[in-house]
Length: 406
Ligand SMILES: Nc1nc2c(c(=O)[nH]1)N[C@H]1C(S)=C(S)[C@@H](COP(=O)(O)O)O[C@H]1N2
Ligand SMILES: [Mo]
Image (cartoon, rainbow, N blue to C red; front, side, top):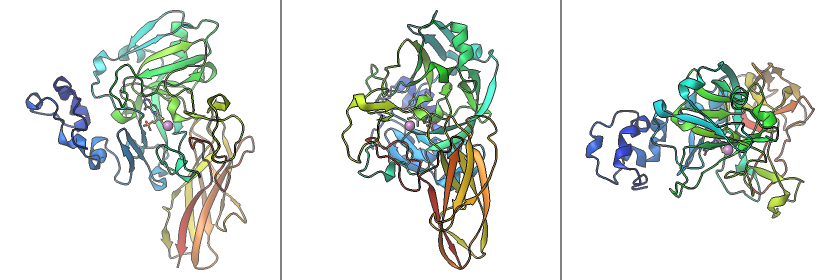
């Protein structure tokens, strides 16, 4: 861990205040190559990014951390309980006043550059948008898949405010052959090589033109936190969150599927046809993940709950990518019988939906509560892990919690 950030230039230290959360008073005296000790210890993840103490750090270079199910009980996920997924190093020098977004590309009618205040002149829209990492649930795949071993907590539903991507695309003008929008952010590749992008993904034009696809400048009514893309982020709810580029300073209008970092190969792609677990799947047989599958979480109670009564109000959220959730059921007998839960409509398209139920337990003992959501097309969550894939994406198996009644 020592000298983790020793590449930081003395000149950049002043702007580290954002990360440290206070002005580094004697920044000018800090010798070249020495970084603030607070940035060298992952126990400081919590203070660095203002995160809840129950968040679980999976990696510190780059920073990756997930929530636990019980942390996700809020209708609107607060920043402190929002998972952090980084492919590279968080930008350490952000000058909001100089920040610009450039839109260009072979299928753009012109190139345009906007400051943040230019963007704020466009009509403002706010939506609650579910962002789930494509790899959420990866830890359960067997044979195991490499990468962050997310359990259930790489999902959030915050309130995002910004300009519609489509309004910007109309402002720039699309050529008739435009099919895809790619993003570039200002985070740096782990190698430190400025020529390399940690990630540069994107969305097909149809998704880009949806009402709810935003270039956001605020989250939950405040500036976007540094870990989540401050000061500007693409937000396309319902799709793997990897398409929602953080720290965005450039969007490209493409005449073909965007070919930025982590668009090809095995990244964020699954076998086009189901395969046996452990199969080596050639790249050309892998397809890009689009809408995320139907899924749900039990956010109350916390797993391991001890009850001294035989009934309990249970609740959580359910979501289904581009679709709405039609029904949610729960079971207390390992899936032998299922009971319908109450289900609220989403506050807007692509927001998760609150479900709730009153569970009753016949006698004292150990139970599991299982919850299963069904989308509007009738697709149901599987009770056990779904189709294996090389990188461990799209695990939408039912969430289970333990409850003891005594
Ligand atoms: N610039 C940039 N954008 C990014 C990433 C990244 O590493 N760099 N990670 C992506 C991935 S894989 C996910 S799951 C989400 C995570 O968003 P969050 O950290 O705000 O929860 O951001 C996406 N956008
Ligand atoms: Mo992700």
